[in-house]
Amino acid sequence: MSDSLLGELKAALDARAAAGLLRRRRLLESPQGAHVRVDGAEVISFCSNDYLGLAQHPQLIAAMQQGAAEAGVGSGASHLITGHHRYHQALEQALAEFVAMPASLLFSTGYMANLGVITALLGRDDAIFADKLNHASLNDAAVLCRAQLHRFAHNDMVMLERQLATSTAKRKLVAVDAVFSMDGDLAPLTALLALCERYDAWLYLDDAHGFGVLGPHGQGAAAAFGLYSDRLIYMATLGKAAGVAGAFVAGAQLVIDYLQQSARSHIYTTAAPPALAATLLTALPLIAQQDWRRQHLHHLIAMLQSGLQHGRWPLLPSATAIQPLLVGDNHQALALSEYLLARGLLVPAIRPPTVPAGTARLRISLSAAHTVDDVQGLLTALHAAAQEIAA
Ligand SMILES: *Cc1c(COP(=O)(O)O)cnc(C)c1O
Image (cartoon, rainbow, N blue to C red):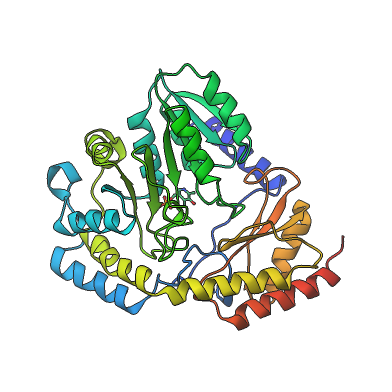
């Protein structure tokens, strides 16, 4: 192989390393949870999306084992060939009921769901309207579908309305994170749906961080805001609060029928193992019935917020499990993350380009698996760091 091909890659990696942007995988040696073994050390982790603490729930482990014993480990085919197991069918039905929408369709990941739905619905003559802070998978979907892309400033409904009003596209779709993944704040869902009604656009909600957490029994952001509309297409992932893996899209029956025929990332891929669907069928009632998990999570969120109220670094306004501590400077954010790690607290520093320049932050993710003592330990360490870390 030519030296120049490899040389280019090496130069790119070296440049990333020199800019302090090289990312490294940590080695997890325990189940996912609040207390984990990472890179050989026992730490309290504030960086998983396992918001309800279900990822190592004994009933779910048993459900996966039983599902595998009954249905085997692989689905063996795509959904439209012979991979659509009765567990998948039951899960699609249960998910639609859970979010009170007519029908749902499974995808293997949230990333694939976003690519599949948006490329199925939009083409060259159409337009997509996207919040600037949307998840990378929505951005990728917007490019892949070849529709005209309009990005609006974060949660800026005036700018969105201007874009919708002047668009001459045949079909319009507004796509947003319901809960923004790096900021933890919510999209103005009611205003978004009203604009979509007014300008006859689809509303596509990516509720990766709201499903299981928001709504009276964890039904997610759309339920929390009482949004019901045939133009609403709802996507949630099943590897975060639900504790397992996968994703689903819910909407009007016709939308789901259409996607089943045309979403390429649903069609041209092997169905997820039926045992995962069996596990999720056991997870759904736990999510719905165990309100104490959400109550405990919200108690921890309030505790963190009041403990950091007058601290050196402010928390960004967020009512969700994602609580970003705004540090600003890249090196200081990194120093703070390292300070905490030395004290057994794992909190990742998020820097540009993942977030805008000058807004480096610690992304604190809380979970129902955390104890009050875990959060108190984090508060104590952050107060000490505020004294000890140089400006
Ligand atoms: C995690 C995430 C996804 C991707 O979901 P996966 O199931 O992990 O592929 C999509 N959108 C948002 C907002 C996310 O946070």
